[in-house]
Length: 367
Image 1: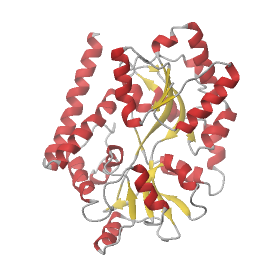
Image 2: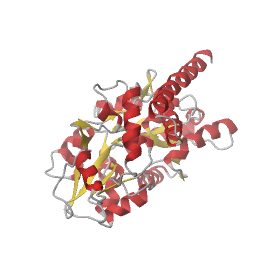
Image 3: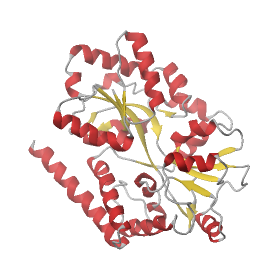
Image 4: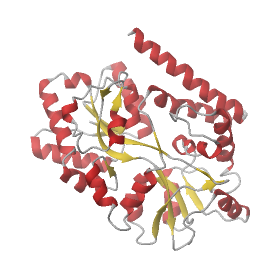
């Protein structure tokens, strides 16, 4: 099993699977930014291909490139599943993943010991920076974060999110590019460094994902609050959101013994006790409607705050276009940083998505 996200969840899956079946589940951990290329390389070389992967749901758009198996609908507890979760794992008329978590969305974490303003605007953050005070931390640069800025500069919602408006992306590139220059951010930092600034009390605000909550709770108590992302000119940021899924290799699925083990694994992770003991306790939003409602209704919990902030997030489709978008953004951003005008970089991104998605679709039709 290869894991690209939430390693602690995988450890729980491994423990429960081995206890119930007596079979060994070997885990190999990858950075989420590297696992996509590692999976493609594994298929090309055929040396080591995982039977199971634990990845973001948008990976399913390239199910044929990763050799993912169609999952029988009988393996999914459709009566209790959140509709959004089923949508995330349904691709090209089939189910390609078992959804365990919803979310992957960005929120604003606030240290109320340092500020009473739970909803700062970008104008306020910029004004603080002009006065020589940096009050925000955020990993930078990161394309997932960049995408949440684009809606601030668009008069309409793009459906799907891969239908990017060139003008909005160009404006977002300019705005995003200035954040460390004008002092809104202290500089370019990775996830751990940005988070540490917030933990150490250097800044009052942190833009980070729902996945940061587990670590932050170890350092804060009641002073930690979760809020919505800052606005600019009364326009809202909109984070992307997706799911966390288990997916199975097609060749492994054809092996009767492995198929049975996979079905057992799918059953274990959908049990209410697993969801409450593992998914909820690790601050993930579950895919079970009744359990979510129970925890959402609990007074003033972090769970209800995360669930509330999931509503305005834009769902990432599990499509070829979404998979291509990340490569397009990285290339376009690098060109922008190297001096290409923002408008030209944005046009490059949109053209890249269209061209390469069409190429993949043509290859699928001809194969």
